Length: 480
Ligand SMILES: *[C@@H]1O[C@H](CO)[C@@H](O)[C@H](O)[C@H]1NC(C)=O
Ligand SMILES: *[C@@H]1O[C@H](CO)[C@@H](O)[C@H](O)[C@H]1NC(C)=O
Ligand SMILES: *[C@@H]1O[C@H](CO)[C@@H](O)[C@H](O)[C@H]1NC(C)=O
Ligand SMILES: *[C@@H]1O[C@H](CO)[C@@H](O)[C@H](O)[C@H]1NC(C)=O
Image: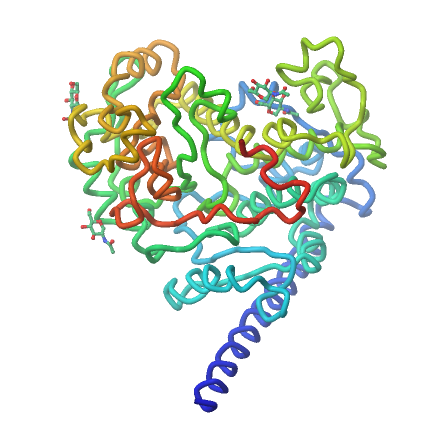
């Protein structure tokens, strides 16, 4: 028995060493390549203060699909969007990197690492195939890691450090890791149910199958989308799941968005433009909203769009005369609604829809595949548990087909992606190179909104909904 134990300890030790060596290696190699990059961007490190912050208002007319290649003439890199594109170029043809990212207060070999998480963490560290590189970043490594990774764009790290709540940092960190290095990010309170290699995003036969069986949807005056064969076998660049699809009139009491994408598990290729736009938005919001930024922000922004930059000026609050709009954010006055619209699922979902609308508006070769549109209303109801029926009031027997008219009209006449396109999903959907998985994929067993059990073939990750948030005061903030 003691031999068994020492063997166990030895394997654990060697695992830790491997992870540490990998981390040190990636830090070093990044440090060197960033040093080279950095010298091309700035004569001196403090010149980042000249960086301009573009806003989403500007991005309406940017063709987010064609924009990726950036001319590296120095005078064009004063804009944060161009700097991010240049430092982390997007290669749509490349496969999704075989990496898994997690983060916690302490590393797994620390005695304070929660024992409940150890079992969850093992599912990610052990059962992905051996080609996967697993990294768990403990709190005290985050800043040095980001300073290396984001050396060419120091305002981004500046924004990260200024964030007044850990929950904001936890959200922002996942986008930053995936944008720079790609792979899968998953919260500590999640369990991997099936190997990542078997997810629809990486299963070539699945990708071919879905496109053969379900012809891509014609849009823009019924012009059929031309599909080249390499586009079919190409892995999607961003893979997200549905967090909430509440089919009820009072949905806004429970969730921030009618269709809310989940961000506890995300798979991405590095440099994906959705993550870039999200990072831009969050960086700008943070620099403008937080006390004592120490960066001359007024010189970085276009005064015509000043309100875009401050989280206090958004939506509901804009019309609220009693709200102190000029009050800067600190750890006491940040609330759940701020977190939703600043770094959380609210802004995550908004940027995804904005991106989709943008590519639809500017391109005529966008692949749109939605097998759910041809599912009849009766299908699927037999698998529903009594509990789910009770919660849903029968929503499980409803299908995306119900919205067929609305969806095709919206796509054809206004080139807008309606939320209905993602409602009642049972099969994954493809929009350009974004794959949206049904609620069951990352949120099985919740017993509502059409979520099936973790035995379902579409269930890949189970969210245990327990204490991911690092700060107790932050707990459940923004997650109603
Ligand atoms: C960030 O996105 C939100 C939601 O779309 C928008 O209201 C806001 O103006 C954006 N901010 C910036 C700085 O782009
Ligand atoms: C890949 O998808 C096909 C369906 O197209 C499925 O039959 C097969 O089991 C999947 N492969 C894996 C490894 O899950
Ligand atoms: C899906 O349904 C639409 C509308 O009924 C039909 O035009 C289309 O051909 C169907 N597609 C497939 C692949 O069955
Ligand atoms: C957050 O954003 C949503 C969607 O744009 C909006 O309806 C809501 O009012 C915003 N919250 C605040 C506090 O502004």
